[in-house]
Every structure is written in C-alpha cells, then in structure tokens.
Image 1 (cartoon, rainbow, N blue to C red):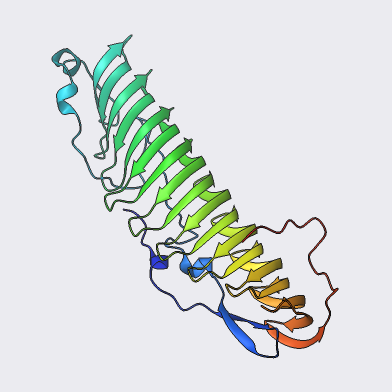
Image 2 (image 1 turned 90 degrees about the vertical axis):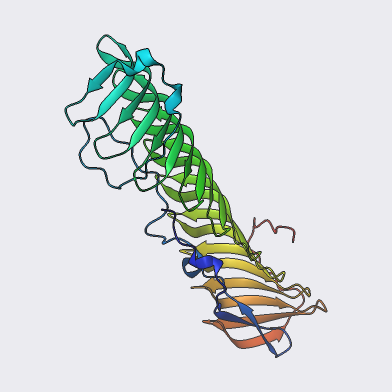
Length: 302
C-alpha cells in the first residue's frame, strides 16, 4: 500500500536565533527527515516485474479484474502453461506469446497487454496482489518508459521508469496531500525537484537519496524563507534567511543552525556583523559595508 504521511501532520520545529537589535527572534528550522511522509530509507517503490520464470514475488498484490470481455474467443483458446504454473492466453506466434494477451502469474499477479517472445514488452497493465496497479510501458518484463503506478489508498506516481524502478522525471502524489514533482534515480528522489506539503510549506532545489542536499529554497506558510545550501536535510554552508517583515540573515550554517560569520539586516536596513556558535550570537558590531555573500552567488527573488 502507499506510504504513510507523517509529514502532513503539524509538527513543532526546532529553532535558530537571529538578533539585529540585541533582541532575539525565533524562527522554525525545517527538518525534512522528520517532516517527510515516507521513510527516507524506504521510499515509495516501483516494484520490479517478474519474469515468467521468476521466483516468489517480493510483494503480494491485489487482483483487479480488468477488461476480461476484451478477449475474443479465439485468443482464449490459445494457451501456454509455463514451468512455474503461470498461464498465458492470447496471441501465439511460433509457439510463444507474441502480440496481445493476458498472463496469470502463479502468485496471483495479473498482466494484460503486449508480449514479445514470451516477455511483457510494449504497453500493458500489471495488477499486483497486494499493492499498486501499474499501467504503461514495459521492456523485458519490467516497467520501462512512461507509466503510472496507483496504490489502493489513492497514492500515485506518474512519470518515467527504467528497469522496473522510478528513474527520470515524475510526480508522486500521496493520498494525504503531499506532492513531489521532479527527478528520480533508482527509485529515490534525486536531482532537482519540488516537494510541497498540504499546509503550504514547500522546498525546491537539489536532492540526493531522498534528502535535501545542495542548494535549495524552503518556504514556510507564514512567509519565512531560506535560500541556501543543505547537507543531509539540514541547512549547511552559506544561506540567507528572510523574514516577512524585511529582516535578513546572511551567513554560514552548520547542522541547521547559524554557525560562523554572518550579516544581520534589520527591517530598517541597518546592518550588523555577527559571530555565531551553534545558533547563538556571540558578538556583533555595526558595519554598513561588510559583504558576506560569496562571489558568484545569485540571490533569488523573494
């Protein structure tokens, strides 16, 4: 079944500290590991399709009865029983499944669609005994190309597959309302993409193995925004934090907290240089000419 969505629940977020007039404002630190609705170590999967001689399937699937009436009688009369007790009915050429047909796998899975030389190849639908229904392109008995995977709870992925796994560009929508639209690699979120929560939060940027990693932009529902670098789901490196009232913090981060040199800009435009240690402001002085933004950094519009 689809993955549960812990991130769609309201969560208390940890805090970091900003001080531009010797007064501390609290803002919430995003923590995607705690906020994502699926376990980062067990992302939603596109299960590998089985060869007709396959061993026991990884997952039991739910049988969906589809388009039985589309089979004409002469197709039903042509059958192949495979060594693993799987049964094929449909077009047979040179003693093999070639063309359109239906396969009942011994474990309960059902496939209906195109075959080439006893293999699922072309367009088809695969119904798993306790899991998703996959509709789309197949190659060598596996989802490969464009397809859609739909779970009984309503969660769905639509996009590219390779070798039975999500790979390329695609959009996953969880039934709780969370949505990821972007790049995938070997069944994991990897590359560039946008993750949106139903409460209005969003992250757009780089991902590595289901984690925010690289440069990205995280926006809260109340208008706060962080544009900067991430490592393993935490702010790390250079980044700029924006408040809705115009305040900014520009500087270094470590493990999700301000750490090192930074520049504070008040809503009145006044600037202060500060030094932070694990989110705590240690010292600051006023300086209107200090620049902390790295060379080549392109500041995105808010």
